[in-house]
Length: 340
Ligand SMILES: [Zn+2]
Image 1 (tube, rainbow, N blue to C red):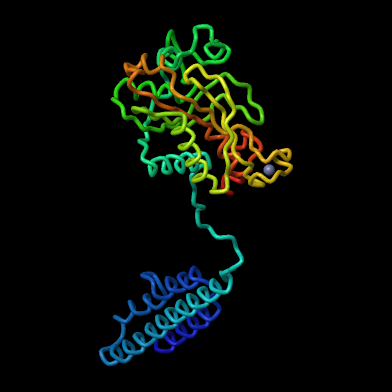
Image 2 (cartoon, rainbow, N blue to C red):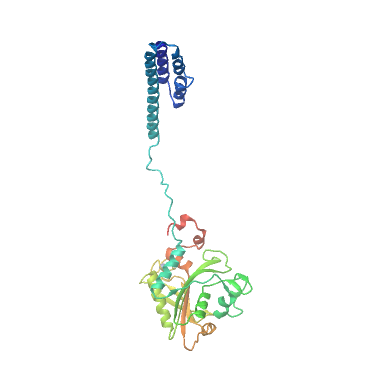
């Protein structure tokens, strides 16, 4: 029986040497050590042995079992080490691979300019006021002294949502709302989206952005208006920038003017961008608040006067960054937006 046991051990160790994977070694374990395994069945027949033989054969049987078990676990350890090494060899880190970090977003250039403008006016002592994008014809046209036949009231220029309700065509109704609810002195700016029935081209979009400024107090004159605009332009675009006022006509101000600013590219020297004039196209519209507008809001024009000016944030953004097509601001193409 001892010989039988040693033969089983030899056979088992030889098979283990030929193993290549965990599945194969598991088969061998079952074949020799399992409940119906070869070693197990030999041990079961030990009952037939004599009292003297039993402990001797029992000892050999234990040694055989231990030898097979040790060889199996050695094989498993060696296999695991080999697999780990191969994995490390195949998973070399390529430091030239592009990173998987998500890219950080950023503020849209229009919002950057809007916030820059608001911050600038806040430091100059103005309040920043918000207003609704849907407003009444009363606030958007009537109280701003727009004549009944003014072309901007036409259906072909303005989005009417219901009788007497429009998508605001300018941020000026926020001035009306402020004057109706607040007593002078008033110093406010308001910025936001505005809507007009415009065809899209390089400089027009049916949705655009405006910023308005309004000052009402006793004794406010055109000199205060020019000073405020000059201060604003120098702070926003640089000390060397000059302004030029040209007479204009708006229903809500009298007198009214359009304001040109030195060309941002050449700072007034003359270049191809400004056709050698040294001036950028008009940047903002302004004027002294019309007495009718004050009266419409319950403010006595005999006591108070004021000025207002407004500009397109889209236009300021385009001038500031040298953007030549307004569509780029609304296409939201990341390749364009992440430059700012
Ligand atoms: Zn120029």
